[in-house]
Length: 423
Image: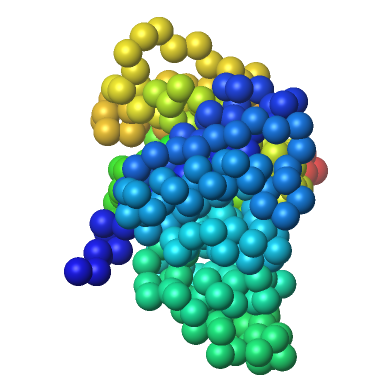
């Protein structure tokens, strides 16, 4: 009887270099286990080998390959997942030892993305990434693909690639890039409209499963899917959020990062990830209860560097306070706060802390506004962090004070009005 996808039995294989820190190596293995669970697999065991350098044709040594094949046969393993990227020759050579499907970490992540993408653009991005990964591996996967019957590592275009020649794939990739270029132009026009509307933009960034979607839902009632799995959501969701002062901002949830995010995915999702680069401020959400949260932070910083977004002001939000079992010590030099996204009081504190962080990035202003200038009074309330608006009996004007982003359109209006008043 054929097992369902949810019941696929998985053997993990990890090569540990002699220079690699043992703790870091097992962190990556634990992450591979989490990725496998997200894909619907059941990890039955893990085989590791420490070597000074990878075996040229098998990645791991021949003895370990024999052990892998014997285990897979005895325990009816359906899929063998390697923690390192396999070359076409690796896949071909390893496939001669076992009937189990052989995939690597990259293909596993691509598989998860394929199952998670829901929007047209998201599906196009994943398909392009899958073809980019598959094209150089067609020869190496010939025998393996002839045995595929569904399951982990076979979603999307991977099921029928044996019948598709390289020229056909390249033509399809060209078509996908053209469709994504159109989608990107639509996205850029949408961003331009948002800028013209003069709304301050905040992007939620962080390691996958840190709680970004939960936070977006709690702050804005966005209705984004929340799951205790890696890459629960892929599409960018943007919602309006009113801060305690009355200032309106746009809050965007973005795809989560992960250690060794495949290059093909980073390239395919670049237009989506550019939402981060276009933001005025970042909320970096970290799972404070995770044993490796400092590694998660480091990985996110690296991705932000790659996106040329590391210069954007940031507040680090250590989430899942309710799951901590001991005292918490933050690892960041940025402004930070420890919260639980499920606690209303913590969300109130987060909003207040965010405004305090924004003030540091903004400039102070004070201006007198006539009572009949309702439009300016309204803009000061919704486009700046307003501290006070008091009626001045002697001048018969409102004295308004607050903080504003220096390059925001409203700041130019403030300076213009003040110059007119000085004259």
